[in-house]
Amino acid sequence: MEVPGYSDLEKIGRGNFGMVYKGIAQKDEKWYAIKQLYQSPNGINKIEPLMALQKSGHDHIVMFNPGFDHDRLWLVMDFFPLGNMNDFLLQPQNIIHTRLFMTQIADAVYFLHREGIEHGDLKPDNIMVSGTAQNPIAKVADFGLAKACRHSFFESWRSKWYWSPEVFKRFNSLYTKESDIYSMGAMFAAMVDRTTVR
Image (tube, rainbow, N blue to C red):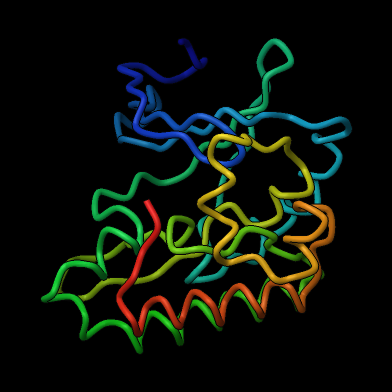
């Protein structure tokens, strides 16, 4: 697998919307996460509103830079050594950060909705952890990709625990701000109960 401008690519995971790699950027020799998307028809057009957020930014949103190569769509974003919220909060010493993460996630979702973007796949796997183990920062990732990409049916089962009833009934075909709020509430309940889906 090759991505222009990056070396030492290593596969680190698979999500609903594509394969995830990490690689070193030739421009600054730093590690980045690189996601190859399962692109849907007109997916590039649907990515454009998400790209507009790069100008405003948000402390609790994972920003990305898109790239195109031989009809492939790539999203390049920061690499998070602390992993995602599933991994982080399940460690007993990190339970003290639960309320902080809830506040940060709610702030991020409010920002997305104010900008007219529904996330569509809110779940612990899509909350990345930056900062340090002592002072962690929750960042919402993969916002808006539900409408821009095809889904991996192999991976989608892990999301269904956080889907609202209307999304579950129609299998990912109806994403709204209200369904995001439902998913966020289900995720917060899982955080309090310290449960996860692998």
